[in-house]
Image 1 (tube, rainbow, N blue to C red):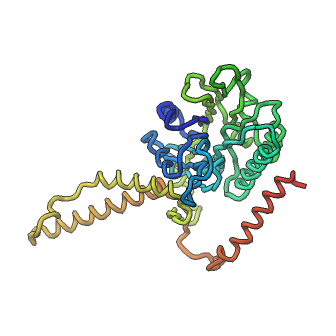
Image 2 (cartoon, one colour):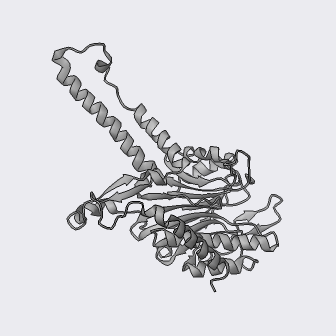
Image 3 (cartoon, rainbow, N blue to C red):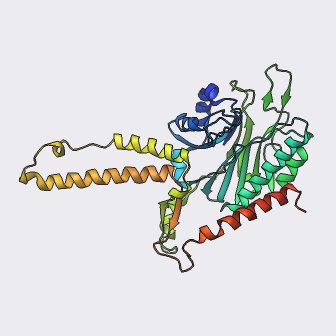
Length: 362
């Protein structure tokens, strides 16, 4: 896993592509993309897809916010069936769930506010920490990995809030415990060097760490990428599914269109177009008439053509669309319209939790 504050994706795209070739997950900060440019994230490397958020709001038709921000996570396509995308609705946070052998892991790319010396930026820092805590507690993940630009070094004004956040979520300071005398940020004048980009991991994930490094060869940004290598993290579900098939109830994964964001749809359209372009359309079916002697053959060709199209659609769904599990029946506990009844109360409870966390958890 790599984390990189790229300070404009468009000026760092070549280096990000190189990083993708060395990694399975890439956490990006400050990509500086507008909402309608987020599809670029999934075109950086042909083996990667992405989830991301822009720091600019276009919902009102007027540019609101500064473009100098935004977060994203790039992930390898071959792992997409083990990935569940999350919509955080927060430009400082992009997140997904990665299902592996040590349990579902919430992966978060975080871009924390800069310390401007006032109380407002400290409040925003604590609020962002509380938001990640709430996200972790609301989702199915049992482990947590946060990587990004924390704008915090040892002894700085934000450091106490940083440590408190780590303790509250039982996170290890993965890079701080393994590296020494490094820096991840250098100003353009070359007069200031600080270590403000970090990895925080749950204990079970931290135990899998094999290596941690800062990569000084990348020069497109004022930040340097930081990486963590894990042993035995990739899922082995496929190899054990046959052994468990007699023990577990029959279930299948279905696309959950209700949880799709715009980027998921764009990725789906791109994947489907590429897949459909590779289907061979039988030329015999394009004729104006078909002889009776060929009707059986044509029927078989039509069936194959149909099955190829369905296969492309299913593959694109599995790769790009969030999924949900179906056990082939309706549970006796399902109440139609339940979400509509509790959505407002759930949102109120979530806001109350954030306020409680922001107030120091009295």
